[in-house]
Image 1: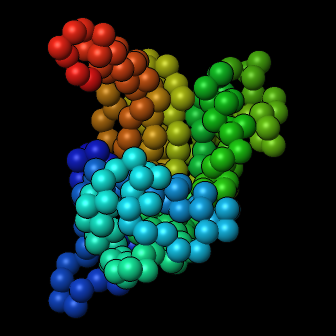
Image 2: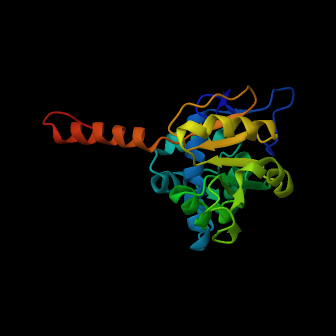
Length: 234
């Protein structure tokens, strides 16, 4: 299994050093690049043309040293005394993250979570087009969710091929998640985001990310408890 939490990321669309292997970005830096991109896009919307590393770092919640090191992975070093051109840096990071590609997302599971994801308007502005949503419940199949009509999960492979979906979100119960995941992989989709409360197994070459909200809440509870205990820091 290829885990996006543990494997360095290749940089698509960014020139590589001659004679060197494809440049790799550490996973923690990949996560921070998304923060920089969000801050830069906010600045673009506000008409900001240039930004210093200190200002961008502050807007992203990191140190300027960390920001400069992260941006060096994508070949952006800025100009001393001038800073970064916001539009150029935004495009450069987007290319490094693969956001200049055409990403089509299918959601499996039309429960409350799946419906909320399908209706979320922020995906399109970030380069992700939700093209399909599936469910096994015949009382749900055929209903409209946002601009999509719920497809029968029995037709998963056919719809994935027809829509050209190259990413799948699993918003499923644990009992059925692995079987559906196996079908998604067999259909040729190798980028999967899972909200299912179970550890899924995928072959090498398949990128799987797991979102476990219960675990995140437990981590928050730990830090909150430490913050309330005298002499302890979060």
